Figure 1: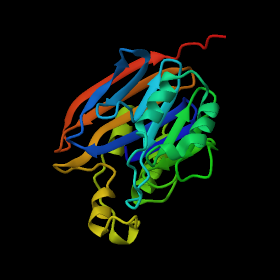
Figure 2: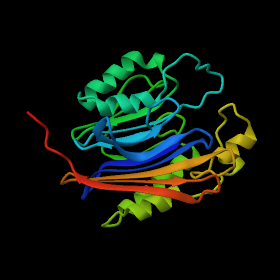
Figure 3: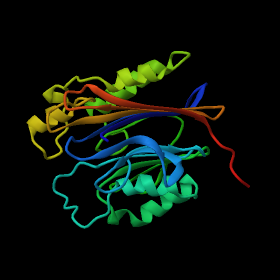
Figure 4: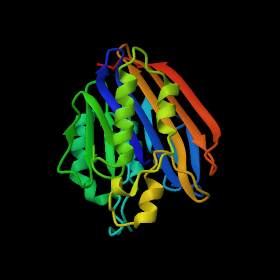
Length: 258
């Protein structure tokens, strides 16, 4: 997943509004988002190569999402899949704050990552290049393959677009999917230099990416209301950028057992 934009406690109707694009090679097999048979509280897609996930929620109101940190100079052989961070948190039972601290302590064992972990009480950011877990404050945040809120063109665009949506009384999942669907390529002057060359920087600058080999495989929208109503929608795309399937689930967060 290469773009996540979210609003935490920044709208009168929602605790969390999140919209994300997962970019990946089309040849890499994946399972469509569903409640996992072996973990029926967990709703997420599944990477069938490593068994991890990129964005998911649980019936208890836990949420996790991950992107990679782009650094072509880093060797990642022998490290654990970053998708396991999402899977393991959503299958576990500790709160987001403690989970973030645990990830921080062992982050060098994983492929380069940016990770969001949340529950009803808090939302945290942990990154393999970040100085430590950061508690997310209320407001709009954006994440691609740099650090949180690194001002890459797609991050800046997505944050501005989400801010415009939040100014409206009602935020719809269709409006969030429209935000994610932009195929605008940034100007050369706007592009970062992450060591992959100008042509690739241009290609990856669009929020929604299409090509025969690599592109946006899934867009995910998560809305968690103040009353605990969750809507999770995943749309999947082929190499032409055309929708090939959708998962749409709605449920109320289950009360925590004391």
